[in-house]
Image 1: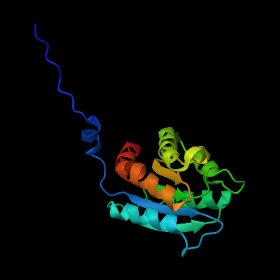
Image 2: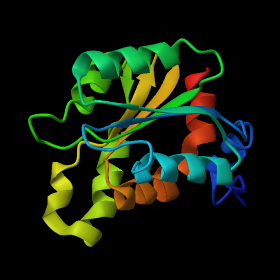
Image 3: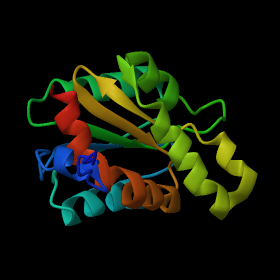
Image 4: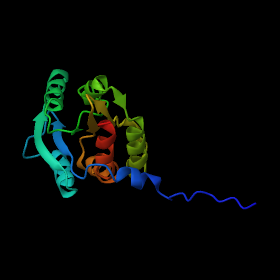
Length: 177
């Protein structure tokens, strides 16, 4: 008796991702006590990489590393129907002023633990054991994707190029279900 096996695609995720939106409405928030609009290279990098990938950057803002301010700005843009994803930069370290992680994770209904794990894994060959101090995170808040990245431009570019840009449409698609 000959048993026929079902043909299995080598990348079943590709068919699944085919229904994902090509362009996502994004808002970029830089959290910093020291950066200005002129010196915000990380926010500029996020916006540029999103635009280059075909996503719509609905807006950008810079906010001090203050719990109430971060919560307010994230909440405001979660309420904007044109924003499907919020990407923050800064405030994910372990200094006494770093509070983005606490604010964002407290708001999350679903966490994507693998995001931070993968980011630290990708960071380790570049910065060694200091990668463990990153508290980059991602998850869902009110059905929207929220991603928090470190403040350094190199870290932002790594996360955007290797993780965020390749999966953003798929993440939004799943969040909308």
